[in-house]
Amino acid sequence: MLLPQAFTSRMAKLLGPEYDAFIKSYEEEPKGGLRVNTLKINKEKLSELTDFDLEPVPWAEEGFYYDSTKRPGKHPFHEAGLYYLQEPSAMSVAAIANVKKGEKVLDLCGAPGGKSTALAASLAGEGLLIANEIHPARCKILSQNIERMGVRNAIVTNETPDGLSGRLFGFFDCVVVDAPCSGEGMFRKDEEAIRQWSEENVEMCAVRQREILSEAVKMVRPGGRLVYSTCTFSPAENEENIKWLLETYPDFTVVSPDTAGHLSPGRPEWCSGELSSEMKDAIGKTVRLWPHLLKGEGHFAALLYKKGERGGEFPEGSKKNRNSGKTPDKKSRAIYEEFVKDTLVKAPEGELICFGENLYLLPGTFSTDGHKVLRPGLHLGTFIKDRFEPSHSLALALKPEEVKRSVVIPGNGPEAAAYIRGESLRAESEKGWCLVTLDGFSVGWGKASNGQIKNHYPKGLRK
Image (cartoon, rainbow, N blue to C red):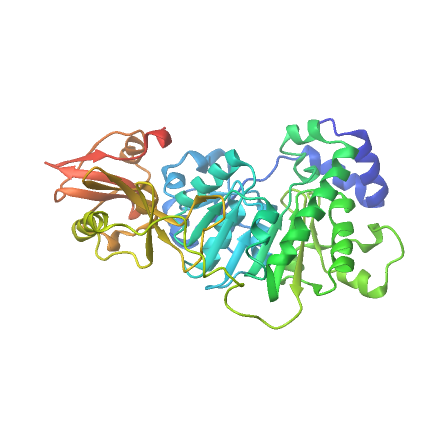
């Protein structure tokens, strides 16, 4: 692997005697990781159902290394959202955020969805997650992963940071900024990151990160917290940015995360200029993950708290605006209620809203007005003429006990692969919509009739 000379020269100067071990780590194979999706399954049950040879990731309770020869991304359980494939060091960010049930959380740079879905799992279906991504194509991938993991209480937005901060001042208990960066920490597993790297790009990224942070801080409530992270080694994008943030926004303070014992401290000596003892102490509470010191790629993270008492439940004006969607009319509501009566044990709780012919369940009382929204909540389904067709999102969010008809097929058997290819199943079930499950975990819809279940797995996802 040919690393940029300017990069290796800088790292040699910074690391000194550690440099030889650091550069030798590039000869090792990257470690694959998966995070158990606790919205659907626990780690004990996943270990029972699979032979992935899982080994715990020390800094992430639900994170595991796996045997790369097992290829869990190809397993039908992946399509059922039982786990998310995620680089082990990247799992540290959600662990540091330490989100609790019922909180309001923003993942400002959310794609492809590893951190967003981890934050959603911590919320456990309570509270609100706004998962945002500025790039439309990446935002679509983020939305698909939110869907696959069965998240009910998330809104996916396609906004600029200032497009959100103007309406959501002081709104969130926790804001996560996994900032776009020069990607130095990914060199071992991503050769494209090497090709795109330059000293100029490092400086450009540092400037852009400060622009993002200057909007992110506005959305943290007093008493709330901000998590800043990158997957780069550059001090300009890491310690220097934390120094700048503390100098610019003195109402923020750095605290050591609970996971700090598994990680390395930040390096205040790599900052430019004379630092006060308080600043040195603060930057020393940030954390770094090094590929020569642990099984993972390069990462940096900081946990900051905003001083002050918790304010009101909503920022001024956020509850006053009406959603840009519309309440279902009497006919649509009757069609949906007929579907619920026939298929579900009970209707999902929450406010119903229509965007075109699509019906959504809104999380809480959040207003989508004025925002570029890709997914305004849980997509329940679509009105097609005089019938209601449930969505794949709804199937993935449901459990067998929440529906009147379900069928179980072995997750490790040929039927699971056949279903994901789009083939019909032979199974006895009462006529109507039927939740197809892999060992009891939902993977999609089927429609039962005469001993056969017609496949309704989305054509775009079949493989």
